[in-house]
Image (tube, rainbow, N blue to C red; front, side, top):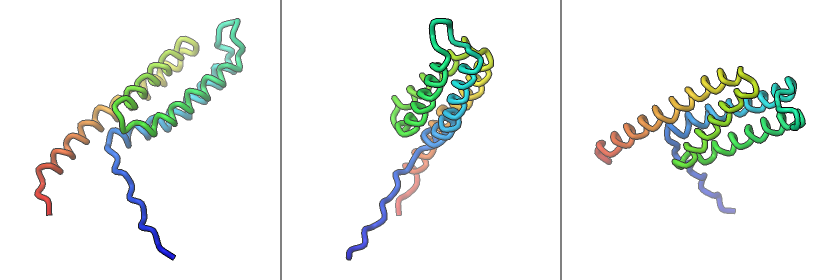
Length: 131
């Protein structure tokens, strides 16, 4: 019986790690926002209120899936698109503007500062003598 070597984990950058945390927590808020839209019957008249739950659930799932692609630049952009989607929810429930402001700010800080940390760490790695 041959023992396989343990699989090494891919190193993740700061922008990816921080963005994953923000989107993961925001996914829970997105689902709850869908429940609020349903409960308040905030959708326009021809649209059934249960679509609020569906929209919140879909947005939450897409946010969770986006955490898997944040290593790519288009994944970061997709995260920004999701922030805009949350902000658009403020047209239905104005309190979502506060949620969009808070999580949009956290996502902005995570991606911008995280990218700066990644650049600094790459520069330090390039400058350090290899053993």
